[in-house]
Image (tube, rainbow, N blue to C red; front, side, top):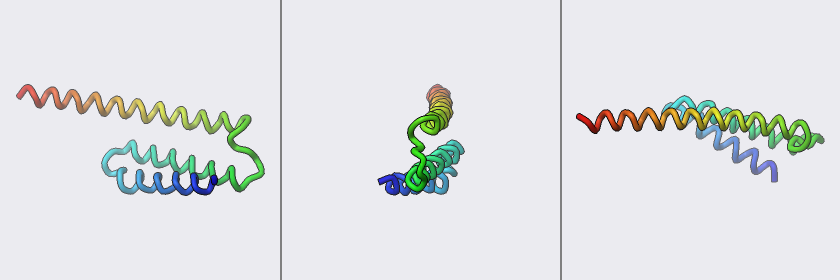
Length: 92
């Protein structure tokens, strides 16, 4: 089943990088996160080590948590910027 997740994350990464990356640069970073997740799931399936438990599990959770904070802050900043542009345009 991990192969399905690895493939799904890989396809999502390709879409984010090549289709949406031109729209906003944060999609390149998010696509990289999905590539990381794809590789992690694939390695978990191929290796004898369980990468979702113990120290490796905490490494994975830490990387994903930091990435989600970065993406969340970027989203918040973009949303705030677009709301201020909408307010400025409405006053004209």
